[in-house]
Image (tube, rainbow, N blue to C red; front, side, top):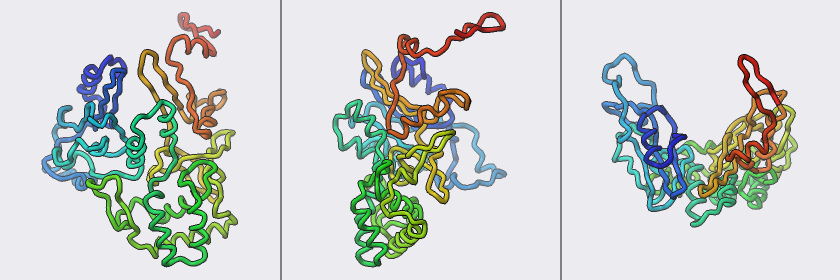
Length: 365
């Protein structure tokens, strides 16, 4: 795949079926784009995704598979009329709009039929800007706007008016001023985040309108139990007051990057809340520390000369005594990328040492 010089050669590499999992996306300097829901998918005799997602008896012949689907069977899209492709760990059906892939054209066990808040946010960012510049793409990559907040805050505000007491109305005043983002300086994000954790956004039963493929970008929606949603918010307000946290505490004060000798304000959040810049964390009494999410990031423009900005968030070395141990986390905290040293003269300009291997030994200069 890395040596492919065009789409045909790239597809030829994929046809070797040497990658057992992961979505694949491709772009080249001629403007070709390509997506494939890749994997070694067992050929099943029956059953849908829900069935095969459960524990299945391994001692019954009907459930044993003998071969995997061929490359030609897998969902894929090449040069869609929309001019764009996206994937945010969602199934293949929503990789472009208008949709080109129909679940009914494939075995029911091939992939789930669902679309979480994060890929919905990704699609909307692309659809709302018909011509995206290189710098804009970097900005969109770092977007921390919460799709879940855009979807539910209007319903939550109505529920507060109908069922809320003083505590809920205090929270409403903060959330109305919030920018609906999870940037370090965002005030109201922490309040919404803690409420969302108790609300459990992944539960379909929490919504009046369940997610549907026909309304993929506007569902789920509506609070199935408005009174309970307000009660959860009032519990959060009470917990903030017990800890002496202001309701509008800045996101970066409670969502932190702590690694080695670094303690930096974080940005981003769990993708379940519909943020494209994923930074999921581990909670403790004082807040949350980022433990994963965005790791390798690359924004690349193909042309006569490659233009690329990249980041390996946790750094390019695992040796604590190296000056490069976690040295990219400051850029992560500031939502910045570094230049990719793609050409030989760029690499030589930034060379720190050269190892010359001579027989069994080597010299360093």
